[in-house]
Length: 128
Length: 492
Image 1 (cartoon, rainbow over the protein chains, first blue to last red):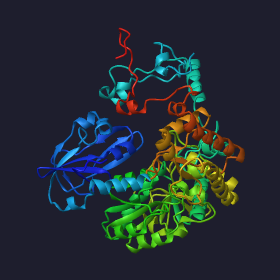
Image 2 (image 1 turned 120 degrees about the vertical axis):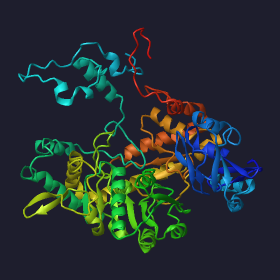
Image 3 (image 1 turned 180 degrees about the horizontal axis):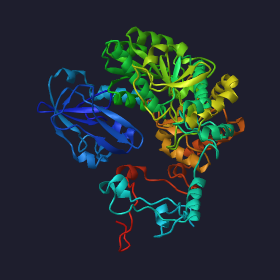
């Protein structure tokens, strides 16, 4: 149910390794909980992010939530298209709605992330 | 006229039309340029509406008649304590000695007002277990910021640079916002299965970098923090201070005092707890009550007793300074004073009735909705519409909209964030059993409609002057400004 080509945080971000870099977005579960996303605030290219610290904010008609970086490192790409079309987060959370790409500064944080199976168990527990 | 399409006041405008024609005052006219300088004057006059007095009065009266208010009906908005505000408060605030007093009047002519503030300080301290009060903050969140500024001054005065503020995940959104605005890094601590703050996580977070814990008690689940004394020990143990968000103070008046639970500073929402009107953007007040160790940092001026009279004290070298003009929004404080002089001895009964009303409603509604944190509640409780969402595809937002069809203001929804599809209900002590029953009947009927006729709920409201608004489009493409039509008659 959750793509197993990537890992997950307890705060509902996904992280996908691509040639040593890490692409980041939020899960379908998070997008569903938020309902219609209306606003997103993302960092600039070059910004430093730290594992499990906020790198941005996503806002829906229900709530505003921090976005947590799955790994530490430098932001090398930002999906500016999301700023004008935040609805992509509800439509295609694992694809077009990626948020940032991070050049990790160390690899230790990756091992702390949840597998798809562990994440499914987590949200299963939250949803029960 | 169709009520669902009231024109804006601008659209009544006719060039040259005026509401009042003032007679010649007999004072020589001085050109504006001579007073403020031509460079500060706009070149074209502002496009203000030009309307007659009847147009003006009718327009705003009509709008006011479409407003839903506590004086119109039951308003179970959780966390907001929408109690009925006794009209005697309004009488007191309108007494000319209060209403017409100039804020710059010499203190000899303002002794009554200063005495009122002093006595209100004493009453708030007696109720909260604190030592002093500042009345300057204009609302609850302003009180939070003011308190955090005093906390910062306190630590800095002791030569300590503390950078973090701990906030539970059930907190009001204003708590982390105030801490961030004051320059602190916010650390979120989760709740445990009973809805209390997770003490193990709190212990891990509590170290010498923490300036304060911001806690709401009862918390936003409507549950009393069962280990508040131990929490205070953990926080004080690392040299940090305990801040109480007083939003839910209405549950414990005359029963327990934050000062006795270990809190060092708190704000009071007089518009929730002490029956002053809820702003609508108007003047509010969020007084901050604090223990002795924070007194040196109080905003100035403070009201002090001076022999038989009262004075304003500006000579406080460690003050954080002024946070609001004069002594705050005085008229609101007169209303709170009137409430306390009327109901002071009955405060305990007030809170007991608020808690009883909430538990009565909870018992009537619990068979029909999920209750993720299943405990005896305080003055409010949080249901979940998860059952309705998963089984019938009806969201909590739809249920809230359907309540409008039954003539009620909707409860708070989707807050606190830790409850999925949250429905947060606070009946307050001023509602009768008949009102509570009628509201419960309506909500139970809606729960049945979710099963038998979900489409009606999903598309509600149907009986209101305005039906379902497109909140998503409004948030994504806000249209906030009226623009005059162009010469061709087309709106720009």
